[in-house]
Length: 410
Image 1 (cartoon, rainbow, N blue to C red):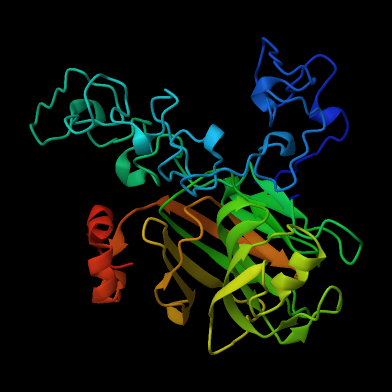
Image 2: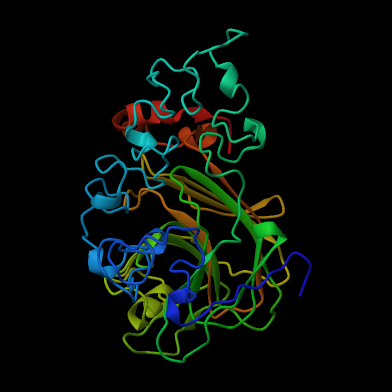
């Protein structure tokens, strides 16, 4: 195994617990288990409803027995678990751990100074000391979130829970778990979580990171060494659960899917950007919908397709850049080969998803490497992209755009 690569062993049986520990992978020395189902509260996906099997059909980490489907603000977090139930905050950031999310907390650091007057909104400093009188308190000078990472090195300078991109603690999502058409993907995490390798010709699957983000810039490099196959490689963003996420996928060549049930699926070469919002979830219907170019009712919506329909080339590095600003529904995708711009989606607006997790995707394609993976929390709009927004839309979204701020070119 290569240096920097590690394997993850999945233990089956007893829900991953030892005889003496009801949460083997989470520290809980008191072993609290208020619903008495044998799963400790800190690792129980329904801590007040007995469910020893921990069944979670949509993979959103809320067990089926306590899934309510109520999500007032549409951020993908059900109301009774949402720390800002009436204001979208998919990241659920709560800097002072007081149970109130930053998005609706008027004193985010709980230092007694309201944010409107606080010169360090995320770092407690009731004295408000500011020796150089630049409007930024001494307690957070050059480190806005107080996470000991200076702002210019911090990929999320306003989120103390995220310091750097890392996919080591990833989650595997099988999108066609039934049957034996192909094996599931095999993921290897390398380079301290900044690189992912997928070995097999597999069923559709995802490797999803743990960090939840709202406004984000996500970039990385595709590289495929297999010279014979011609299938899908891509990535996902705004991952809410295994039924709802955005996806960018790239097919090398035209092809009809070999399983015609439940319907004929046809793919052409080139890059696609889709909204996945599946009523059925993982299985054959979603599988064929992912393969199919066109939208499929109650499964996928095609948001953009590269008109050139150019397939990827093996042993070639391609770099992507993805911008997502959920507050105004803005999505922008660009693909490069070296310095050459291969594809550009233009500004796309879709408000179906308000933020979520990031990950990579493959379907029937082996020997894929995603490297130099990088994501940054970002609520600003690059100047070149802003200038392409139609004036009528700018006027309609003026206050939100002003809050996002127009920044340098992307």
